[in-house]
Amino acid sequence: MNPSRNRRDRHRAAGAASSTTRVIALVTLAVFVNYIDRGNLATAAPLMQDELHLSAGELGVLLSAFYYGYVICMPATGWLAERFGARAVLAAGVSLWSLATFGTGFVGSFGALLALRILLGVGESVAFPCASKVLANAVDVGRLGVANGILSFGYLLGPAVGTLVGGALMARFGWRPVFIVFGALAIFWLVPWRRTRIAEAGVGDAPAESPPAFGEILRQRALWGASLGHFASNYGYYFIVSWLPFYLVKARGFSIASMAETASWAYLVNALGALTMGWAADRWIRAGVSANLVYKTIMAAAHLAGIVCMVGMVALPQTGSLISLFAFELISGFSYPGLFAIPQIIAGPAATGRWVGIQNAAGNAAGLIAPAITGLLVERTGRFDLAFALGAAVNVFGLIGWVLMLPRIAPMRWRSGPGAAATE
Image 1 (spheres, rainbow, N blue to C red):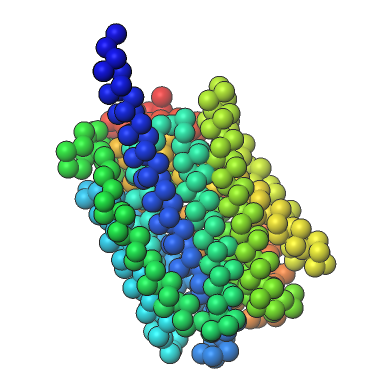
Image 2 (image 1 turned 180 degrees about the vertical axis):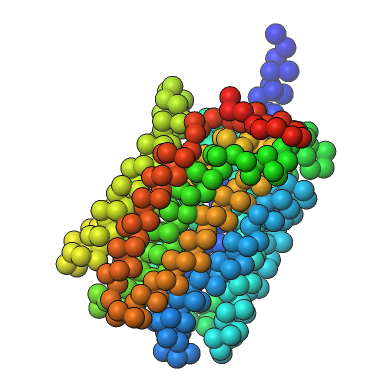
């Protein structure tokens, strides 16, 4: 045995682990900021409505407008992440969405606000294709649950912190300074990111895998099952995160301060559920349970609970409604690591960027629909009953996508050129 060589190997392994931890921390911080910036409009909605004289229907359009740029651009940003590298593309996206957030603090009309929300979506469309590309390259399959649990914790914690801190600041200083400050702060993330080295398949000097053609990815039943499931998961999430502050203030009589506190605790429970289940999923997989059984069971349980909790939130008195809200946030949080761990396992480093770009675009079509249709239903009926009933019904599509359409969750053997991929 060579003691010097063993020491070098240990140092090399420690350095690789430290580098992986740094990468996970920074992409998590990026999506944390991402969700603070996109969620500020929901927190400010009651104040904006009064100052800018917006109708419930116009608020619904604004809450959905973010997804016009977000959904349309996401497949392209997945391709860009694999062509030019996730590191550079993510940095460009953070810069763009920070400027859009900063500019929102100065708007005076519905049209200007609409344009900036679309621009914010364009910038933020890079986040998950790039983050998934990075994790697929940097993290072993047996630890993807924890990595995605941490990532989910970051983006789910964003609304909690944004609502709590943003709500408190808005109650004291108004909504405009909050957008200006948060937009300016986001740009500081670029400093440590520029100093981070990332090995990326097919980019620069990193070893390249044989990537599948886009058409081969599009032919996979797994892609469309995961996309339908992702849509259903996101519908419930975006319905709640977009309209919960307004619902608590206007329908349940909460003050801005009490709304911010309640919503923030609910979002925190959601984030802790994701972090906990990411750890538990990896533990079960390393103990010998198949990734297929672990993730399909989690996704199915979350959608069944979603049906019950959505009904409870609107039908029960205030205490029961809040219990249903917190139960929904906890159990739906359990499913979030699977949203991206599943495609990372199936697609692998060679195709994760484009796969997640397509899947997340389909999933985030819910962002185009949920806020806007909720606004229309509330405007026409003056109540939230139909909106919550629709939110409950959409969970059926989640069961179809994750359980029935999605085949076995296992790595694909991609083949270049004509032909189909096979599951190992």
